[in-house]
Length: 247
Image 1 (cartoon, one colour):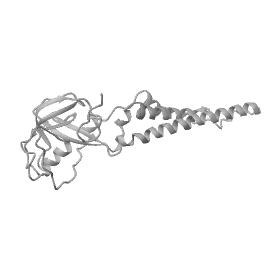
Image 2 (cartoon, rainbow, N blue to C red):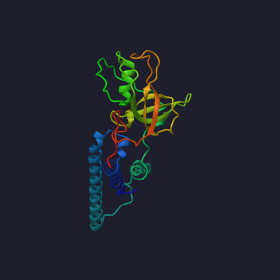
Image 3 (tube, one colour):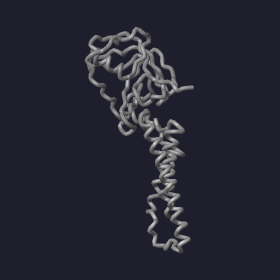
Image 4 (cartoon, rainbow, N blue to C red):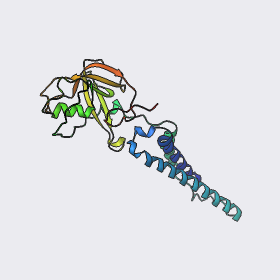
């Protein structure tokens, strides 16, 4: 493995990052949207460094040939054979990107505990009321005024089957920074058969009674009236109201 290896690796890594962050939306599977500009800058920098390194290596090779000092065969410019494995992550971004996080991840981790909240604003009069999964859970378990009782709400997320005893959850995965710190928030769905795992749906219904509403004993659960398939939103790795892809 000769001198061009580092330059080729830098170029491939740069192209991979640019492909994932500039020319496609693949990077949003793994990082928050706010980090996208940094990935673009990193990809461009790696590409420039790789091309510069290749140009310098070519210049050195040309100089050595004219000076009569070729490769002596001592292998000082060689890299360990295992270094070829570094090509795999770079190529994966160009050829086959790792799949997005979904029900497989969510089913193996407990739901994220929602932050403690003491004051709640009055709910809008809209019916059904669009809510995030976190907001719904907070209202169910912390709102002593029980404003959520009897209200028709619409929640959006992807399907996570409950492998322990049937049933399913509506789920959102949340990135604080990137996929490495991903956490999930889940709402149990009653009264409707489970669509296929990882299907994005909007579920309209009312809180499923249990425990004492407004306390931690109340389950984050919904009696579904309708379940409609929807497109995966642009902001799939937040728990905000869904944004639809631009046409």
